[in-house]
Length: 213
Image 1 (cartoon, rainbow, N blue to C red):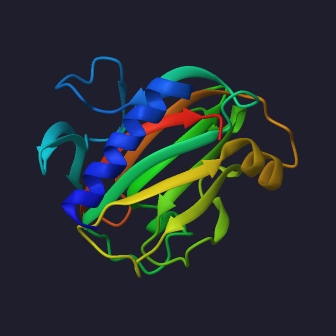
Image 2: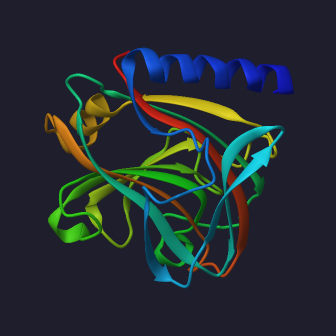
C-alpha cells in the first residue's frame, strides 16, 4: 500500500468516525489514558508514535504478554461492524498457534461479552494475524476452550510492513460461532503477545471504530 493510499484510508476513516460511528481510538494524541493495561506476563510495550506522519499504536515485545483494553458498551444492533487497520513488521514463527505452546500473535483484537478477562465467565471473539493457521481458519482458544473463538483474519502469506484495513460484522460472527444473537459487547482489547513461544514481534494498529455499515 502506498503512502497516498494509507492517507486516503485514514481520511475516509476519520470521516466515517465523525459521521456515523463510534470511535474507539484513532490514536491521534500521545496519551493512552482511556485504555487500561492488563499483564499476563511482563508488559508488551505499547506506545503512540508517528509513522509516515500519522499517529498509530506501536506494539513490541519479546517473551511478554499484556493487553490494552477499554470497557465500552457497544450496541451491535446499531453499530455491528468493527473497523480497524493494522500491520506487522516483525512476524512470529510458530508451528502451531492452536496449541497452548503456540498461542501467541503479533497482532490480535478481542471483542468481549461480560466478565472482561475471566474467560470461564464470558464469551469473546479474537481476530488474529496468524503465523501458522490459514486465513479465515477458526478454532477454539487452547486455554479458554469454546468460550473464546479465534478467527484468522490475516496469515503469514500477507506482506510485512504493509497496512491492511479490516471490517467485520461482529454480530454476525457471534451468531455464527456461538449460535447466539449477541446484542451488546462490553469491552474491546488489543494484544500483541509472545510469551508462550518466547518470540519477538513488532506491529502497529490504527483507526479502530464501530460503524452502522
